[in-house]
Image (tube, rainbow over the protein chains, first blue to last red):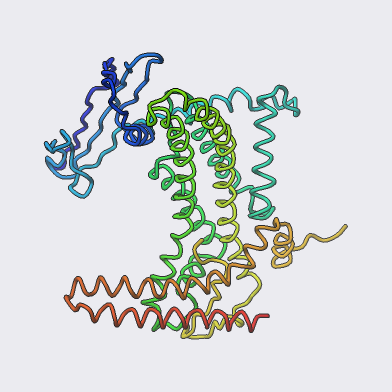
Length: 346
Length: 89
């Protein structure tokens, strides 16, 4: 019998670790420090300003063996590790980026509860927060959803677009605070977000063209003898856009943080505080740019999601025009020229 | 009172409400689709050939054969799509 075993190791146990300062003349390993700080980890480190000490909050480790004993710890050169999913061990551990996602979600729900206009008798929102949120919501609805999906179908997809926009925005912004991390600088997070858009895009396509029309588009409109090549081509094409969404958000958010760290790291690499006269203002400039990028990346992800959904919806539009004859729909189904024009990769 | 457009007319009207980037993207999609068929055919052929060689031990004939088939099908798909678009115009 498969027995689910959940291991909680060091549940939110915190300890103060005393890190020794670098020895005289010893150079800091700046690249390793930067990679350590931008990467995901099973603990949250809170550095105490003005000292070499930091508080480490150990996060719960959750391992679910899919096979008996699959999650048994192994000793390697890097210490104790656990086998991966291929070996039958499902790792659902809470990590630094997971905590940031939870935090972003909590802040988002909290701020929306506070600033949403819940008094239906007063239609005009009052206060900076309520007006700011309304402005952003109306912008996403009118400029992104309606202009890319169309007035009729836009209300159906606007809630998703709003969720994605605010969630990415909050995750991006969280990374700009001290002791926090950018969850969108993790490829797994951006891949999961892109997967949501991908699923919704396919649903929009199926809704618009029907299951038959959707499947027919996957044949590429060529003779059935060519389907063994063309169907994999079309299926591969479906994944190009979510892949682009994943990599673009991940790379943009990660790169900004690495640049800030490297500019500050120059002080330690050069071993002179005088470098800080140039490095710190530059890092500040990039930091403010990152503030702008946080909004831009949330906007671009939402815009592209709306665009892809709109293209899938347009597939139904294409079918509605009764182009069956034009596209070679012949009786008997020998030819399947559906003119998949509006759907590849969406 | 003017009658509400229905069916394809309504959809047509909806299309005109789209923003410029969305309209341009939708207009460009058939061409992107055609190019993807050509590129994707080659990719699928080469990958399929490599897998076939690994599983069946036919190196290098699986790669050579399926690459040629993939490139040909991709090229045919591209021409087919372009011909359809030409006819439509």
